[in-house]
Image (cartoon, rainbow over all chains, first blue to last red; front, side, top):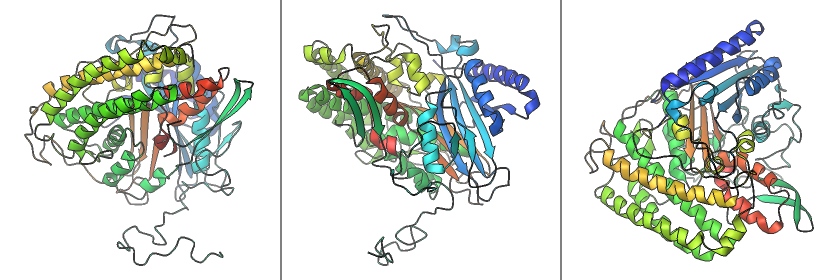
Length: 215
Length: 366
């Protein structure tokens, strides 16, 4: 049992048609893309501007029934063009999940799913201007699941989520310096003072991690 | 709690929980940053170590994303071996969960029984990967080597034994008063709430919907083997309780056993060791460099829910390394949600509720 390519393709195409019709004037591009591994499954890719993001998110949630915000990825492009210094990628899923009555359950048969029940993957890419304060609106109020994803993205990458309540460090220590976000590209990996892991394979030249600091 | 390093802050009124707050990040290792300096084959061992309880599924999850990025073809025999290895890992992981969940509830017997059975599957996985817990077995474009001599025979015997052991567990637990009292009517969660909050996997299936990434976003040869997603019938309008989540994992172990037995019969090329490492039935040559601007994404049914990898290739003229590798851990999203579902229950229910969601801090903190 599995969702077939045709099912997924038709669902993706209808979503793209609806999205392009609704947001035709605002420069938002939606396309059907395909993964390049085994089943070549299609997904919907949306390129959006940060100022349109909330409107698209609401449309996705309430008109396309995208109920699952699974992943938020921030990327830093210090050498990129001025209009793409940062990028935020959202991965959303549409799942045919609804509450059941007591002592019953929902058994979906993949091949028989149709319309809005077909599971589908959405990828939303938002490019942000170069600069020190990349900002996108928070979608915490639309998907509860975005809450901790956004916390993590701010913590590690330093993307600001405007309107996010209770933003705090989740993976780094709470007393990390302000503006320290380790996945930004100015922070390089170091191996005991060496730039490359294999500069000193036997480790004879290794120095204590706190060398040169006032003790 | 026997589920790793994390803090749960609880505000109580008498014995009733009023508010909770989860603190994570104690074993944050910066895997995403480290991976930016490794080439694509070097990343697999790091992904093994994301979750020490379910290393094989995490490595597989990464491999599917890398194959999406590098456009690698995978021989069908390798896909079957991956399926078998992932399902063996699922059995081992669920047994680890049950073994840790027992002491949470007050049944120490369960720990010893589960560790005993888990060792059978760790031995099998060790035969494949060479190591007891971290296997580094899947490769981009296939698997490291063919199944070892006699592996199929030993595996079938162990799985058949284990299918009887599941019944033993059920005899031990399903009629144990302590077990039922501690689990039934505790920690209700509704399916829609969970999906809204980003919870996935067995926890959602416990609430009565058979949504499973293995058929919804198909990736391996799961359509060719005989199985059905494990799903429960919750008894309350309030959704699934801890007992449903326990039941769904027992059922999932049954389904995994069934799947393994079926897959080893259907494997192309036969269930004996027929191919040397690097044979085209086992592994195809995959490119090592990703084109500029290419991305890879995988959605994978890990033992605790949907684990996802998102890789941006190329960048800075060094297509050998990923420019950015992002990991979505199911438990990172689930733990804060579970912390909030405890509100309204008693302090003594915390281990039951938390344990029933199968938290693993290794993957949470990455």
